[in-house]
Amino acid sequence: MTSVLTRPARPAPAAPSTSRHERGFWTVAAAFAVSLAFTVVPTPLWAIYQRHDGYSTIDVTVAFAAYAFGVIVSLFLAGHLSDLWGRRRVLLPAILLEAAAAALFLTSTSLGVVVAARVLSGLGVGMLTATATAHLSELHAAARPSAGRARADLVATVANLGGFAAGPLLAGLLAQFGPAPLRTSYAVFLVLLLAAAAVVARVPETVSVAPRPRRYRPQRISPRYLAAGGGAFAALSVLGLFTSLAPAFVAGTLHHPSRALAGLVAAMVFASGAATQILLRREPVRRQVAGGVVLMAAGLLTLTAGVWAASLPVFLLGGAVAGGGAGALLKGAVSTVVDLASPATRGEALAAVFLGGYLGLAVPVLGLGVATQFLPARVALLGFATVTVLVTALAGHRLLRR
Image (tube, rainbow, N blue to C red):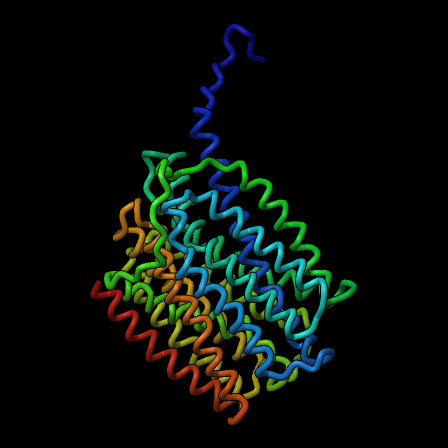
């Protein structure tokens, strides 16, 4: 037994500011993940909307595109404002917009209300994504000044894809086993989002705001970030497929209508992306990009083969491989931009990249939804996969040259 005189001295506690920034780092990461999880809650619910409210495939595509439209408008008009106004001043209203969307979902299941809620959700995410990514990098630098940036990059990208993975999984389980499948998930996330807003209000600010507000201008698109934006476009086009029309392929073409399965499929793809980012975290950015291109191409071809063969296991394998590739390519694109951008323009640079990404989330999926109105689903998916592989190869080539 150690006496009082010989008891080892306790280590000195961390400096209050450092400890506060460390707590803020994890708080922002958690709020980021919750907000992004909410945006994909409708993924396993679209089949229920189709069955009980008469939504057509094109209605689901329009509702999905409304979200992407909100994100794109918000990124262009407000995604860079945290560089001027401060990270927390943009994060907090962004999370509250998500909470407002959750409340709107609870009021009605009509297409007009759902589209309006999706636009609100998109506006919030457009403000949130680049701001949270930049804020995490800066909080990490303040908490661990001597450490590199790899941990911050990894947490930001895993919070991104991890949130996307958790949302459809939780919504699918609640819809399968809980009451009121078109309301329970939104009620749960409304509580989580309000809690996230309350804790984010206490996170340290990392931007010195000018005493005189600068003149407003919309987002600028710098040519130096176009290659990274192209990589994000390709990556999110694959992820968009699994948050919009993939559940319809599983329920219809593959004849597996389970709500829990629909959520599990989307969750698996995003979880695969997050796992790939963790596995490649110590690899050079060039290797992450190259690996992402190869995995995305292989995965898209495999999942298309699964649909043509009406094989759920092959479809799931293709989704997991494509999701892993999308995660690697997205991380490589974001890391490239954070390396290139100065701290004063980091929010704006990341907003430009995510602007390209959310264009990829909307445009290819909208094209696929329209194509299914005129072509068999298998043929439309084959066209989607072909175009996406070509875009991925071009974006990857430009990123590697960069």
